[in-house]
Length: 56
Image (cartoon, rainbow, N blue to C red; front, side, top):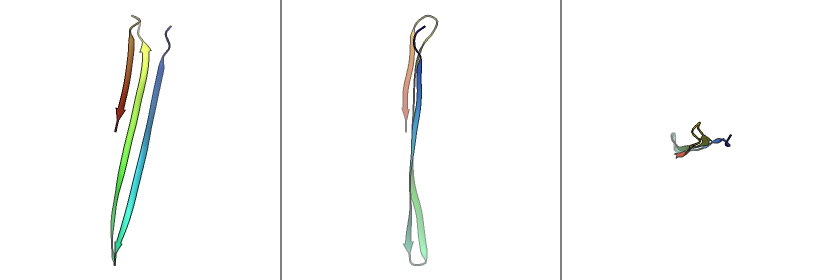
């Protein structure tokens, strides 16, 4: 039987900021998420099926 493989990975990044103006304050931030899936296998007809995707 042919080898199979799969992988899932991801990341999260966040930056929150506060800005004070006298008695007032402003809150804002940025968030970034990303993930990747990668798999490869052979079906019964011995055809290679693979997928490699990155999302951000």
